[in-house]
Length: 292
Image (cartoon, rainbow, N blue to C red; front, side, top):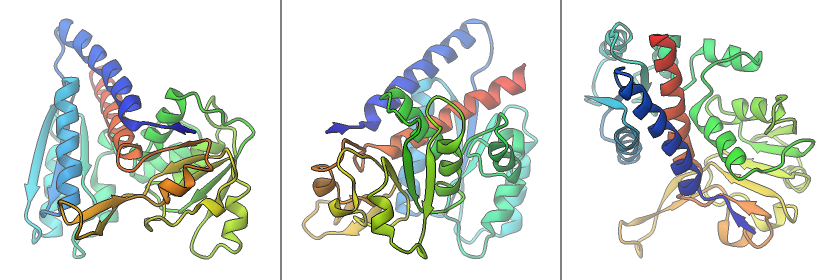
């Protein structure tokens, strides 16, 4: 059984980016610049954003973190995004989700200029992805594709089962895995809360992407021997025996599934790190388009 270690794969991607940025700086060009907006002080979001800022520093990117109170109005948040849209020194913009309930996530996504949409959520980006055009790919699916490439996981002709249909992971993941490229060409089945015979479908999967947000949902008896398991889930589960009072769980029951799978991503240390790698690659692309 192979562990698809996100730390190893993400470090490889970041080292490539670091070398490219170093060359750009040697040519007298400015560094790429990513701006992140964090609304409120959600613990998980704080961690995610801190890791993104840290990755920028490691690669040589500039980064700006804009902190807004949880009570910020939707209008004020949208105005903040517009200011970043108009800032010639900013190449990429991300707004950390989830947002407070009084703010429309869709409005926020659509307000980010498509040229700076490094999270790949804007309808323009999604439409181009579906049509197979060059675009920003949502960071988590992009990171997964980079992981498959790094570990040279064979996908051509395989049956991929994607559990979850969100616009952030499930839907774009299905498009990428079914697309005609080196780490695509899968036959893809998308499963969700209304799927009948989910276990039977999963047992047919050569590749399973679990992205439904339910801790340890995928059990060993749902996995075909030798299957590749990509665990996108990351949930804080209360645990009084843990030092922090909680443990991070994925959507896959790792210990038991690992005895059946041919390859599996750990949680933490798997897809989450690759999401940041995908975001960094998107930011460099945005930068290059702007300075070309």
